[in-house]
Image (cartoon, rainbow, N blue to C red; front, side, top):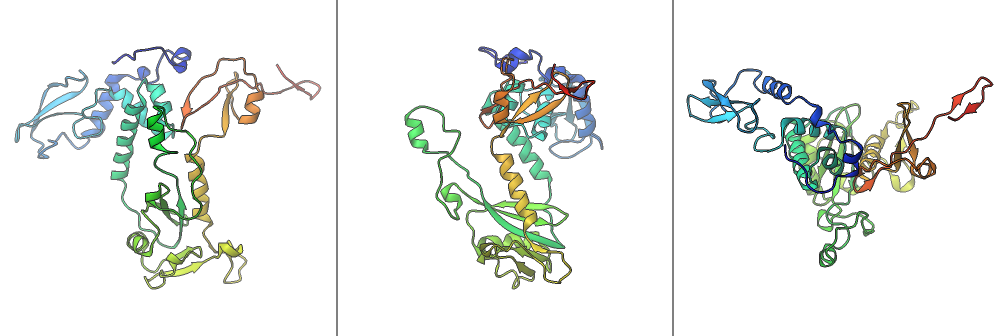
Length: 344
C-alpha cells in the first residue's frame, strides 16, 4: 500500500486507523470473484468459456489470473471493470463506492482514504459513469410533470484572473445575470420530467428551445400521457405531439388547479418543483454542523447554535465542497427526580 508523504491531516491525527484498512482484502477479492463470475469464467475478449487458471495477479496474491485457450488472452478477476488498471486495492475501491452512496464529497473521500483530490475525483467519476451506463432510460406514463431549472456550472468567478494571481478559484461564485441562461453562459438549463409515483428523468440542455426538448420528450414520455407544465411557451406544442397538456400559470400566482370539482387540485407541477429544492440543497454546502454527543447520540444543530456549543474540544475537519465541519459536544438534558432538567 502506498504511504502518504507529508504531515498528517487532522483526520489522521484523530483516527490513525483508516476504514479501508479494517477490511480483509482476501475476503473482498473472493466476494468480487463470486459476483463477477456468477455464471462461470469467460474470456473478456472473445467471451469463450474455454479458459484455465494461470496463477495469481501481480497486483494482489488474492486475485486469480486466467488464460483463454481460444485467443490466448490473459486476464484476471478485475479485467474489464472499473477496478482494472488501478494500483489501489479493492478495499479502497469498495470503501469509496460506499462513500459515494453516502453522498460524501470528493474532498472528504480523499481525506478518509488518504488520496489526493484529483485521484478521488477520477475514481468517483468512473464509479458514477459505470452506474449511469447500467441504468436504462425510463419511459414515463400516467401523469407526468415537466419543468426546467438552471444550475450554475463551469468556472466560479474569472478563471483568467485567478490563474494570473496563482491561487485557487473562489468557493462561492460571483452573482450571475438574472433570467434564463444557456450552457454557453455557464448556467445550463436542466429539464426535469417526473412521473407521479414513479421515476424522474433529468437532462442537461444547451438551451431551452422547442427543437431541443422535442426529441427528449418524445423518447421519455409515452404517447397519450397527461403532461402538466407551467406557462412557459416551449411546452405549447405538447398537444400537437400527441399528449394531453395541462398547465398552471405561475406568473399570476396559480400553482395548482382543480378542474373536475372533486376538491383535489390535480393540475400542478409541485412534484418536480419539490425535486428541484432537494437537488439545490444537495448541491449547496451544508448549513448545519454535526454535533456528536458522548453518549452515542448524533444531533444536528444550526451553524449559529454550533458556534455557541462547547468549542474547547478538538475539531474533526472534513470538507464538503470546501467547507469544514466542526465536531463539538452538546450535552443532552437529563430529567431529575423533581422533573426538572439537569445538565451533566
